Image 1 (cartoon, rainbow, N blue to C red):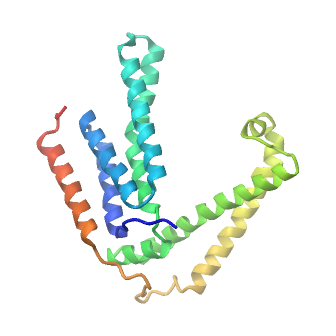
Image 2 (cartoon, rainbow, N blue to C red):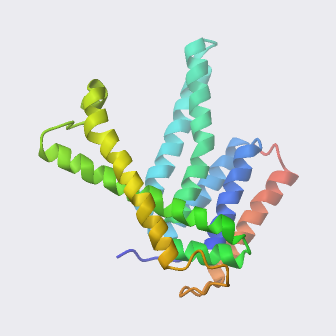
Length: 234
């Protein structure tokens, strides 16, 4: 059982917005390190330390490779690789923030948070179906892969690439059929749970900001303020 602090979904949404802000504006390396360290600490305090170490290690691996390739001269291949490494490193905080937001937060809590933020219900319903659709589809894909391995078909991803027709017959077509059934089931579930009702909905998850939420929001505001006041800090 996972133990650790819990954050309000609205606070997690602030983290995603801050990660998107950091993706759109130029950041010095020290700011990147600072934000990645904050995200790493967040994973530790919610009890997802394995994910945190994994993301943090990938960040420093990408930074180390870029630092090694930079002095390699003006060769085109090193320039392209450096571009890919920097782009991947800049995208990593956004992926890490999304992973942090989804860790330990139920879809029903997200619905309650979006309702608190007065998001139009016409937008909440498709988002709810979307959030439930992809995890279900991913689970179906894993079940199909297990069944194929049991029958000795497409044992690895490399075999799937080498035999595209077999992949199409045994994986793509079942996935499409499963996606169709999943979409119908989720639509029926949404109607049964009253998501189509335009009246105000209640939730069994009482949302309220806790001490850790206020601390995290203050830290994010300080980071934004620091970036705006000292943009070239290095």
